[in-house]
Image 1 (cartoon, rainbow, N blue to C red):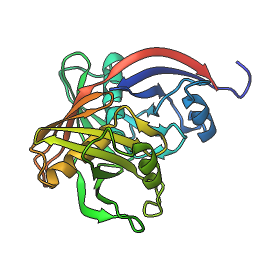
Image 2 (cartoon, rainbow, N blue to C red):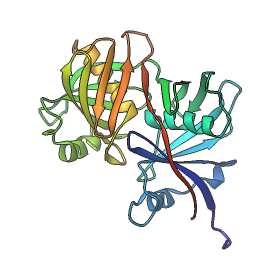
Image 3 (tube, rainbow, N blue to C red):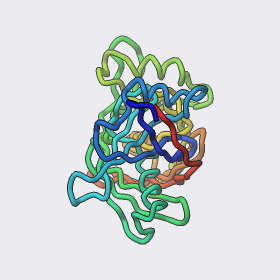
Length: 268
């Protein structure tokens, strides 16, 4: 290998098509740069992914592993629900976690707990969502509900997700001046008290086939508005997630598949 180049051995994983590269490092200097992540995420000339999940040794004894999340544009973010499920599954596939035992993971926004179901099913305790009342973007007549689920989201109720202006309005709101750190934008169609449809424009990525924290934010917004009961199935372009929340200070749980696509290596 040419001096100065790094070889990354990675696993390509996805949760409902929300795709990741997952790899492990031993020291921060081995993490790719912003430019390198952008190059790797290119779906024509690189590997292609929505986010890169970088695993390193836990910083204390409370968690089994510490992970960091980098978007396709190289920016680092606080949390990723589908990513957390894939990391738990990655640890199970590597023989570092038992299917019968819950495991605790640490990321930039704190801790999450994972519980395994059959085969590739993983449930994650996403903590207590913080829901803010409906707000309006300063210079536009757009109502939304702001939700923090370890990372920032806004949820817009729409009559039809198929007709929602995800690529245009999502891009505009993601980088709006009201959100100095940018924001994830969810478009939620309420079907009934137990079902909804969702599309999400993720900051630093664009629209993805699924967004775990976006689904959690949509469940919280729908529950708070009286549209959803304590358990709801949200259908995203890549498939469905099950969300459970009793409101208030109760923890919100998200369940769905986390799958290994392939393994590989790349030199950067």
